[in-house]
Image (cartoon, rainbow, N blue to C red):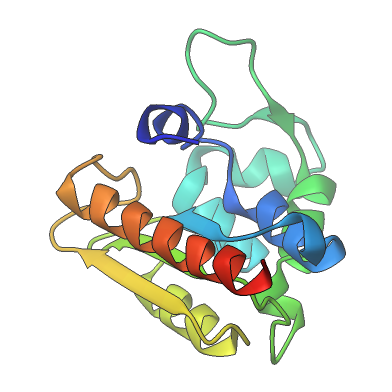
Length: 168
């Protein structure tokens, strides 16, 4: 995978990748997490991401998720699926997270969606001995692809290649 392929995948979300790393660790050689949505509660998630839908969500109604592209059909969510997201978040359900591959995390210092403190706590729970957190000063949840991204990605590739070389 090259840098251009990675930039296309930035909106995929970390939740499913983290679940995959737990369920099929042999299939994951390294993780690059951009603004991972970890450590959120249902209330904090709704109040930060979609406060305009607070009443509707509590009334069990389906609402469009605001993060979906304006060029795509709306992604409808409700209280049940948002609660499932919170309940299955690896950071919320585990004291120690048994992910052992190299992990690189990039997060904005001014992220209003996922507080930096949540990500720091998540980092400490990871069992991997090769975890790097890069904080982008002045950036929010949607990160610019800058030099820091390329450096972090290169660092991840080097770690993965070192592991590959040891197993040959």
